[in-house]
Length: 545
Ligand SMILES: C[S@@+](CC[C@H](N)C(=O)[O-])C[C@H]1O[C@@H](n2cnc3c(N)ncnc32)[C@H](O)[C@@H]1O
Image (cartoon, rainbow, N blue to C red; front, side, top):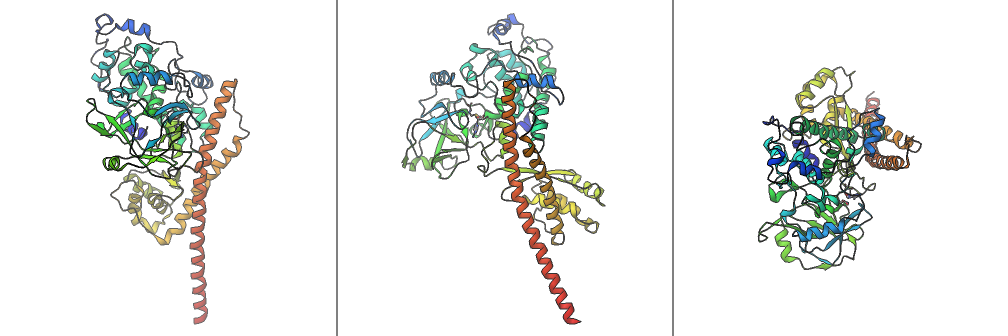
């Protein structure tokens, strides 16, 4: 979950070596495990195949929205939760103080069943229950082929999930997979035309398109270089785009990085049933221990904050102070039955939460919320070429996005604005400005050019207002938007997407409104200061006359 997008960015597009074998490494008959043909006779092969649709491709759009995979359950289903709980305890999960319940926030989640004391361990998950890139494959040969081809962790795990899921009851993870959502909430499931229609105003649209392209590219790469070479191990009825959309959707919304395992990524059944919250107003330390295989040495895993939304209690999982806190933990407090326990998925904006987890927190509740403001160098600028060159030198382009928060904007954005408005006489400063506008930590960020402050702020204000007007237009039009549906099921889906889009646009616009207010005030101060200075100068002139 946490850091998922960053991890994906660096590892998703695999750099495979060319497969050395053209045929499966072992023929079905020579398998030590059940034979491949036997395997695949048990694989689920009944689902619809489809790929991510492009704009205008209405038929495929409808198909993409409606097709599902045959494993997993509905997002709010408790049907498989008790089977999951039982299987986990049978597999070594110690008795827990939480249970899976239907909840108000996040549909299903973990709720505390007992009073919990400060310092008490709340979650215990033995590593034997983690799914990592080192997990054993039920189909050993498939795992060996991927590893031999140097497939990185993310695509490897995505393929592993599909492989195990398709084996249904024969997989060791069948109880876990049955309790996973059949269609995780994720922008991966939005078609291109839905992204264009609903997220036109938000920069998150670009991120979603990029992510979908990455996932599609990864799947195509795997298909071309590996799956097509070993069709017995990776039949297309199972290992197709729809299945990869599902598995990447699961990874984006559930994968965690484990510092205690050298930062490797893993799916942690049970812990991944915790929903997200920012409602933190009273700190408590809670420890999330992971037992080693010998269960003697305990190592600590930092996932994030655990909080309780409806009252003033919450927990923070601490890495450094854990030992100390565990010793001094004495103060008991009460959690009523069925009170949901939350963690924080990290310092993410609402857009990032929508992108990976498919939900938008209530307006104004996310202190880390930000909106990407797009700034553009004007082509009509007399020094366009020189400015563009300076930007390029520092890894930037003529159009740049910067995150704006309710508390303000980064120094880099101001530096870009200085560059955008600086006159030809300041050509000698272009390089310094472009360097400060880049995200290189070595460059000096806090540059000031009071002589062009007003123009720079005015420039940012104009960008802000142009963005606000796009949001306002969408929000206004959304009420009467033609949803273009042919069935009640489609209508529900479109209404849901539209609501998410309105929520994200409203929360992003809110930040821009705040920036607009600050910018106008600053400009008013500058202008009234200038006016005062002008009046004073006029007064002196008259005096000397
Ligand atoms: C790690 S899973 C948490 C368990 C999940 N609720 C389940 O039943 O499988 C993350 C998913 O839970 C849901 N979720 C988590 N926190 C949420 C929140 N604050 N509001 C709405 N949905 C949330 C989203 O669907 C997200 O993709």
